[in-house]
Length: 220
Image 1: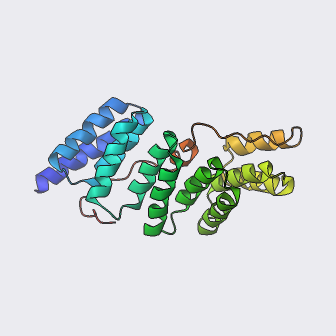
Image 2: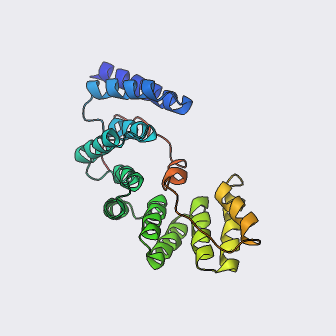
């Protein structure tokens, strides 16, 4: 058993390295080997799902996230990940359902509030979106994407002062935040025009890397 755990860990950690290097195919191969040794490793399914999602192979990503949830029903991150697939495939109400569950399991999961707010924005529910951005910031005042996103919402509502304050706060927390920088450049010279892009989850995902291997902790 100890040898299998060690071997699983080696495949798992190498898969994370491959993912960081952008070698998606080798990462998938190593996660698959880890799963062969330990078919109940929810983190491996979740991380492999992330790689499939990055390849836009949404069917395989969805199946991996669903398997992770089956193995670990209290795995809040897996619900968040499956919601990201629903967002990418424009199934926004299904995304909200999974994000509701993710937040129920982990009420301090600030990025899940941001993701749900984005779904509400697409569905033209700005008040619910604003409430979720506010809650994300209340839970984690260092989450730059929550400020830049809320700034976009304020800008769309023509609340210029509030938008500029949020963009500046986002840049204070993350000087590389392109959304906030571009918005500050734009807001003084153009009327508000806020578009919802196809890549709704990209900036959210970038803040969260692959989950680490821990053979002793498979409960959420």
